[in-house]
Length: 449
Ligand code: ADP
Image (cartoon, rainbow, N blue to C red; front, side, top):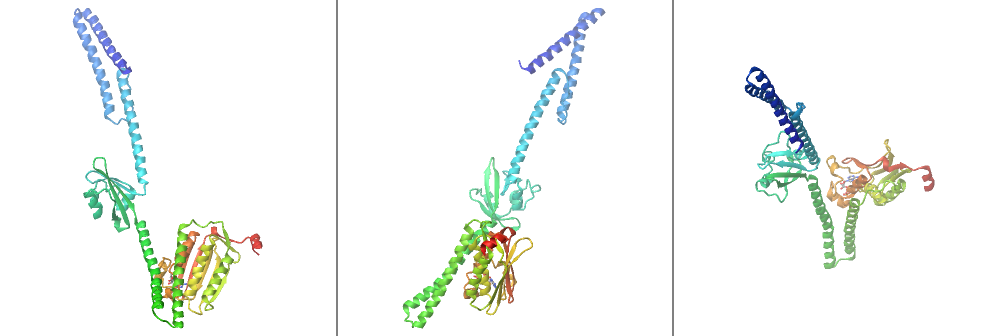
């Protein structure tokens, strides 16, 4: 027998005992009045009525408690009704705890989906929005509260999305424009349990941009290589078919050499860029003397200028920079080579190293050359961007120099600042962070001396 059955048997036994007491008392009273049987019946009836009323009152209190908010304590009764109330309360509390635990698990689950970098949208079998996370709301321009229970296709009208939902094309993702035509989204619809649908969205704007850049880059490289190759092929044909005089032959060979040099420069710049993209950031503890870097680029600039410009170098004697020597020489060298190439004969070029208040340093190259019109400045560091393509060809540029400079500076934690005005010259500043520059210590200086 279970404990509860024990309580029940006790309860019934108590009732029987009370009934018996009532009947016995009724019999006693009836005996005295001369009708003992009527006394027994009346005593039994009275006891039964009293017990029924008491049970009814207790049952009513229990029902009352169950009917109202159950966070109040259950009515405290004695005996069977007390046990029933206690057990009911215990069951309720256990259920409440289980429901709360489930709710907490759901909250955690939803906050996990909320943290996803992808948009998540749940649709009911009729296509109404059941739930969406913040990213999906942002991607599709939805209000996570107001738009619940709205039909998804009323709010996301991109034909590719509507078509995929209608045709139940759930295998392939579709590409749709983002909210307010900002960016591009890739959307995948997956059916689950009883006609519900899970809609996953991902912002692929950056990926598409990178892909477009890659395509442009390949097209540009092909174009840049094809041009000198076509010229070379023409010259080879000329040499093979025409009987040229010696001076003509020399002229053709010189032109062929020029085209070959151009291709060599292009391939060298492409290799430098590939290396910059494929290698880890330069170590921040490989210190190089700035003076010797500047001496190297000065020698190259003087050779390129061939005495056509006045070139001055200032500062940097006591400076050291942490980074990759080849990359820094390439960045400094490209600025000087541009200054020489875009400054007409007789112009002035100044390269200077200076310290900044925040502990960083600035390497600045100024020229009095042709300058750059304002509208070109923001795009000037893009690969193959040229203000004047014919002029660049004349000056032997590849269109990659400033892209290399910008890349190198980024890898060293710095940035490139450009100031220029068409016809008045340009200033390029390479800003290096404090972490990567220092004044040469006295002991180092002694060693270097
Ligand atoms: P390029 O090989 O064509 O010189 P860069 O990337 O070095 O390629 O430069 C991109 C463009 O920026 C050049 O084609 C030129 O139009 C412009 N430019 C760069 N440096 C200067 C400068 N010092 N003065 C004027 N224009 C410049």
